[in-house]
Image (cartoon, rainbow, N blue to C red; front, top):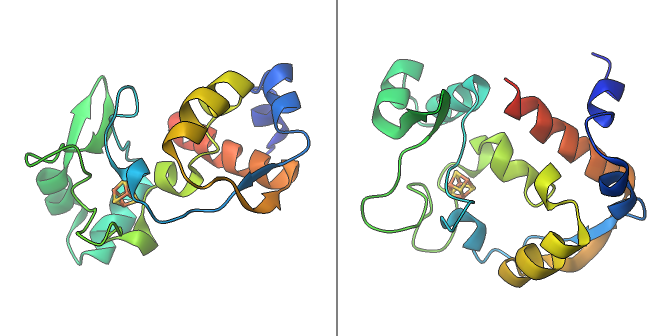
Length: 155
Ligand code: SF4
């Protein structure tokens, strides 16, 4: 597949924002697994649902029926009736299906809508302890994550 098409979906200002790379290392707080504002849904591609169903040793149909819901034509995980935490976030703030977690979770915080200084500083960095920590992720690495996320959004 020609990935240059997806590079074209990013604006010049987005590309400039991560042109010198971004520092991020997950600190394991589990905060990104808690629904807040517009970050409310964990969207699920068909591949995500297949992977998670396999991890839980369930059929795709049974998994989808038990854990997923469709809104506006997109599949996402059902809300947790007991709170804003994701259904798969355990008491130790770990993901119970980490190996098979969806694209959206794997690519955090490198989402196209986060690629501007204001959002990064005023929202993402304030709510995610991993921002600014760990090794520098090169522009190429960031772009690969953004591309994976964009691909999942147009499924
Ligand atoms: S699936 Fe796992 S990584 Fe994704 S939000 Fe839920 S607990 Fe967090």
